[in-house]
Length: 452
Ligand SMILES: NC(=O)C1=CN([C@@H]2O[C@H](COP(=O)(O)OP(=O)(O)OC[C@H]3O[C@@H](n4cnc5c(N)ncnc54)[C@H](OP(=O)(O)O)[C@@H]3O)[C@@H](O)[C@H]2O)C=CC1
Ligand SMILES: O=C([O-])CC(=O)C(=O)O
Image (cartoon, rainbow, N blue to C red; front, side, top):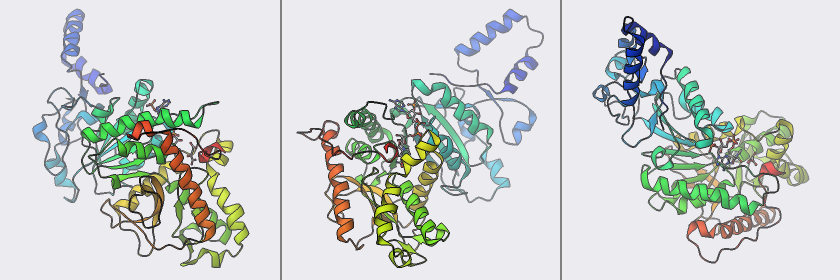
């Protein structure tokens, strides 16, 4: 599993160094170099680089303490765990020199793992993460990208684009296909990769197939991630996949697992703003209750428009119940009909929003939606599920469930329906979460937003 690439400048280096040697001698030397895995010539980006092309892996002693990085084995470009750094990211930086030019305000590096890294959502998300717009412009970042045999080449392509983007905050890119290697020391795990449901595939089969991926990834997180890793599951069916990962990672607090329902919240805000004839930043306090499926409940009752109850601004209750609600629930499918593929860019934006909501304090009086662990929740939702609820954060990565929202009969019935669906999904994956007596008997309307 060797992915190292020479920069084009590397060949210039070779030609310059050995112009008079006989061709076969050069070939022999090259072979020797390959065997000893020292074919990693990269360009350094510090002042030293201006002197010309330098060999890739700087001595690890040049890593300064202001940014903690994975220790590289000098001369190999490999981390001790076997995850492979990519190209220019195999180079360590003389941060002392860089620090002379930059304010010394950068934080300790954050390591973010992304699965399905060569997929469509990741293709938008990774560049947001690397740019600093998600974790902040003072937050250096390491990206560990998980792919598979299918995506080996594509993953390198992603890494090449990240190289070419010259993001100052992006300090490492590591790629690999073994979760137990790629997840090591992860502070955040964004689990996006999942098999899409194919024609004729039963939802129960999808639950089982993807469930196995998330059971394995839960185990890997348990074994090697930071004990306080925050996990955001995007791959569908994301609530149940998140529950499976959680159950397979007993070392990690259950509270740290999220399923992405922020895209649904954003979709709901957009529809309310459209109806009210206002720009969408006037809409707040929107909750998505339940499953990321067509049983999800976009809550117009507690939502606010310009700080007033949305139901006072949009007085057409029939519209709220019969148009707004199904429109949000099936927005994914409507988009697939137009695009021919599921939401990728807006999903990436919503992942960024979901992370930002955890690393920044929630504006006073507001909340955000996230699929979170229900045990001990204040709304009487069954324990031991991942269910979308209103949350707020102090900006430390943690959150609390916002209590005391108003639940009328309309909301109650629908919330219960989504809960029932999640309980049924949980039964289907009993074999993956250590429960006994599992059986799969899903309600008919169990569908992803994109499947309508
Ligand atoms: N929660 C939400 O709001 C949303 C969730 N989604 C979900 O996010 C997931 C990713 O979407 P998107 O990036 O558009 O999808 P893509 O098809 O572009 O990428 C999915 C990735 O999943 C990986 N994968 C893992 N296992 C399999 C498998 N058995 N067969 C095929 N591919 C597999 C593939 O990576 P590799 O080859 O490297 O394994 C692939 O790159 C999907 O499950 C989608 O339903 C999408 C939109 C919204
Ligand atoms: O069904 C899908 O894959 C897409 C999806 O989740 C959404 O658009 O909300």
